[in-house]
Amino acid sequence: ISFSKAVFEQGLFDHASFGDKVNFNDAIFGKAASFASATFLGASSMTSVRFGGSAVFNSAQFKGEVNFVEATFDRLSFKNASFEGPASFSSAQIGDAADFSGAAFKDTCRFVRTEFGNRITFLNTTFERDATLSNSKFGEYSGFGPLQATGVINLAGANFARGGTVNVRCRVLVLDNSTFPDGVTIRLVGADVDCTRANFGSPSLITTREPSDRYVPASEGTDRNERTPRLV
Image (cartoon, rainbow, N blue to C red; front, side, top):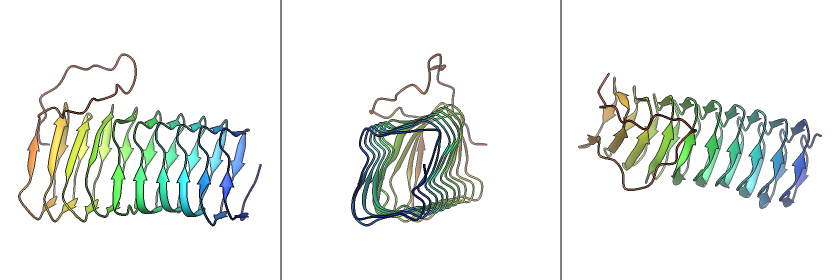
């Protein structure tokens, strides 16, 4: 089904079920759009879609690949959403707020050159494979995590406008050429960290102390034994 270049004053697709392929490329939502608890059975393409108001995908299930490349959001929420295939938000522009709390990415996830606005939340978000957020920009930064990845969290070249706290459990955290002008507190569990060419503009802290927030296992059988983090 295709909604390419369609114009919606308001889009309500709560609990909808989309078949093998769905296309919202270049569609425009003037006001709020809601896909809460919707199921996308196949590939979903929302390239260059524009959401003028809030975009809600809470508890949505994406069974196949999903593409939000170059999408524009005023505000978005993917609380408890499930991504079973590759997901891309690369080059997307996200305005006031982005909330991925409790979301589960079961395949690769890309936020390359994504621009985040004032607030971003990845509370108890899980990545069962690598998560790439390289060369992304973060606005009024307040907190990143706690989140978990079984592989690599790549923040190479990322720019954080304000300081904050990064809480992650992963195998490798890449901060190569990242910029933290106000400094940052990084809490690691079981991760090696690459800070090559990172720019810490103010005093910063890297610690192995476990955050107080609960981590959600990325998958059954995940080894919860903590390794001693090291700089690489």
